[in-house]
Amino acid sequence: MSAGTSQRRKSGIRSRFGITLSVVVVAIVLLNLIQFLSMTRIYTYATKLDMKKAADAVMELNLDDSEFYKAIAELESAYNVYIEIYKSHEDLIYTTNNNGWIFDPNQQNSSENELKPRIMKVLSHKDNSDGSFFEERQEFFAVAKYIVYGDFTNTDIGIILYSSVDIITGNAKTASWTFFGISTVFLLVAVIALLIYTMAFVKPLDTVNSITKKITQMDFGQRCPSFRIRELDELSASVNALSASLELTLKDLQIKNRRLEQEIEKERQVIELRKQFTANASHELKTPLAIIQGYAEGLKYGIVDGSPEEYCDTIIEEVQKMNNLVVKLLEITKYDYRGNIISCVPMCIRDELERRLDAVRLLLSQKNIKVEFDVPPEYIGYSDRELLDNVFGNYISNAISHCENEKVIRITCVPVKDSYRVSVFNTGKPIADEDIEHIWQSFYRADKAHSRAAGRFGLGLSIVAAAQNLQGRDFGVRNYDDGVEFWFDIARYEKPES
Image (cartoon, rainbow, N blue to C red; front, side, top):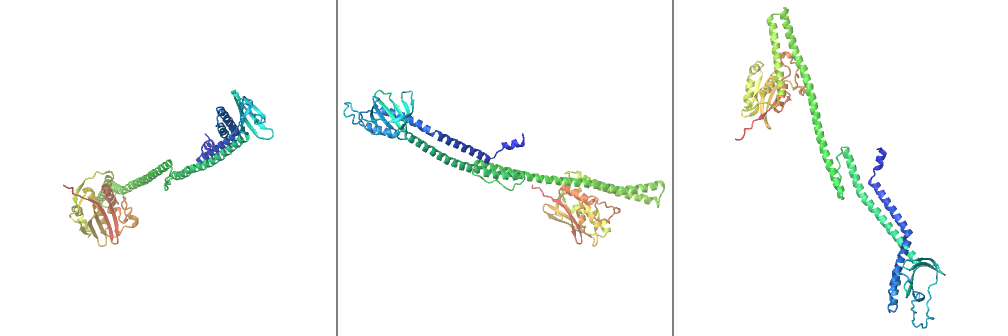
């Protein structure tokens, strides 16, 4: 089907209104034309029927009845006719012009009162099947014409009725123009009614159409108003419901799309971090392996610059560093893939932290670091002991490595919502702003001065992040003018009610 054919088949309410109006106008015009052409004939036919009825009524009158004149006058007025009555088909005994009754059985003075019939010329004549006839006559000395009905089938009385053609034509014209006026008024009323009815539909539909177009453009800011017409009001309510549903669906899709984009971006970052992790791990392992290989070959081929014991010590030291690196890598991997398999138990936070702190007392003493410990004994946490030990241990190790100036490490614990927040503060240099967002990444070292010779690989804080994420608890870092504070949360233990 072509576009032109499809377009021609489409029509709006306005065009349908125009077609309907055109049909009504044409029908009324044709109806008026027909009635103007046929109204005279219709009235003539109706007059002939009335004349036959009047003749039948006259035939039923009693000529000797004293009420004869009154009765026949009423018939003449009712049917608007002139009447002639004949005795024995020849003698005129009554005519409307004279209203004289001259019938005299004894034939006394009949010559003086003799009535004369109307003298007219016959223009046309038509016999009826019952013996009566119709004629059209015209007066000799005037233009007036009459329709004449005669009935002489009765042996005693004959009758002729006259009806003026001018009266018939006048009545027909009056009826035609009356019908024309009524039809014109009807047409105007119909046009106004159709216009009002059409606009009652068109304007609301235009409004609904405009709003639905905006809906197709994902604009849900407008709503259809209420209408008086029930069907249009239901349509308006349905469009509003559809708009609201689409708006909610679109918002939900947008939210899900943003989440998906975030997940994709997160996955991309994870993939990128894994690539960096692999590259950094390879780099960190490559150096000790090269040293071990070099020193081992020196021993094998006797190329020794110093004692063999020094070469062996170097090899052992590098192996230990590699072992530490592999252990930390395994910890990160274990936390990343461990899922929710953790063993949380109630524990005294103070006892757990002191136990881990005791392991580094000697190192703290060697570096002349003062420890300030403020953890109330009544704080009972709910955590995995292994994870808590690794998190706190990495924070302490990090604080010892960066503790400077006054050389103070301050350990505190305070309640925060449904958790206890453990903070490890060390005096020294604050972390640069450009490094803070990266310190939780594997192999990232904010202090470039701490080389691999110090045995630090930039994995401690990555282990903290993995462990805390595994438990669903917060962690973070804050800079101060005189140092840095790292913190992590431990869930509070709520003793079950007995």
